[in-house]
Length: 235
Image (cartoon, rainbow, N blue to C red; front, side, top):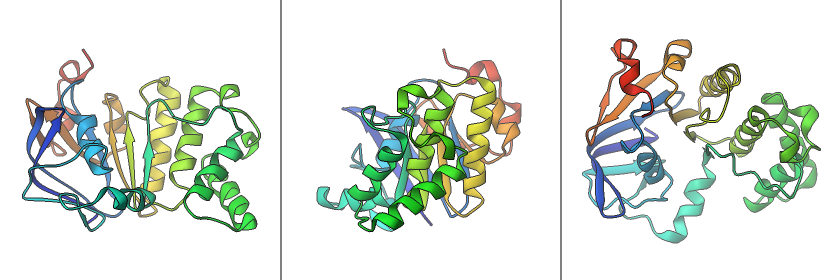
């Protein structure tokens, strides 16, 4: 199991935003986390890559590490096995798409230039951005920037992709394309865990669905199509 949370409490500063969290993810699973703004979705994701600490849990393991005992110096090694996709892309705006990719690979220990450029070409082709590698981020549309962010996330062939509202700033057609790409990646064995307010995507690209509400998280996979969309929509 790639993620195994049992009775975890999630805190944002000093406030408990989620309690009794029982959540797991395994190879190839495509998982949505839905819920209103402030329901704890993003905070839960942040615990998975150790942006937020877990202080109370029966079990909190990610990629075989016990998060309750993980030391600060061990966090970079954990994150190297993940792909993290942010809503605001977080690309380096002073360099081209190709150099954004190169920066990540060199920062994670790649040294052979031939292998670096081969891997960059491979991931950009996978996300349909081969013809944009010399472009600067500001020359790309929002959807193109998100595709580059996904390419960056899969550079090191991660076991898990964690995506926080990856379609939040995109138009419906582009959003559908992005979620479809993530779904395709999950079919190769990488687990994908993503938060979203885009409820129609749950029908278009089915997966496991968890809902954060009133301080708890619940598996609603069997009945998510019956959800009141107005209730789940952002306030």
